[in-house]
Image (cartoon, rainbow, N blue to C red; front, top):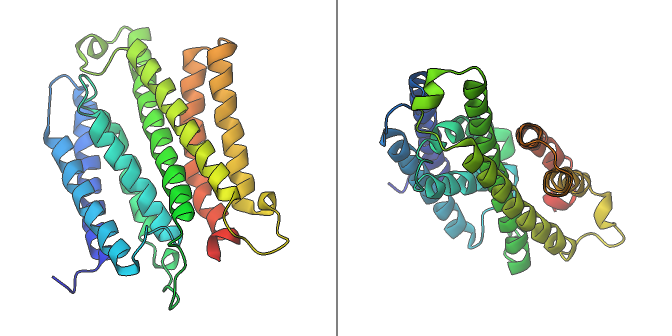
Length: 273
């Protein structure tokens, strides 16, 4: 299977994410009224192929594969998928995959665009350990933010059903709204800490002489995103913002991240050195 490139393995992973998305629609329509492990194993197979794709590319260049937008996006998705699998093992979080699958599939389709993966130069320079630490913490934080958005979506669904006294809220296997609120906040906190570490290490990376760190579009975008999540945390923990407004903010923040990630990365000089 030497002719099978890392992109072929990733394509197969995206196909499985798409299959999981279709299957998730049936889970949503059933209201999660019975335990079902099929979706978990579909995502597990997808993440396994995804891991194989990243490993194959990493071994090719002897370093963490985060050298262009395609690699950064696939790393983000891998972090989200892996975190989803881990959290889905917890009691009453078995259906987290049903909320995460559409994100994996949609962003995976975007990542497969050929323009995102131009050929590497003869000596791609992304082997520095600090650069790898920066990329890993930033992308893992995106994964935590993505899971927080999925948990927030589950919270909003549960709250809506309870508000309108729907029977499926009583029969649902989703976690309680109290637990969903707690896990959403904790995931946002974990993501925020990782994101902060990533920004600090990024400031230490080499850049063109005389070019300020905060002048790069991606850095400005990251600083804005950091402030958005800081506001969400402070408003919820210290100023008593309602859980509903907090969870809506988490969903909107992650949607903003997904919609603008590629644009800012494209115009970033520091991320195309």
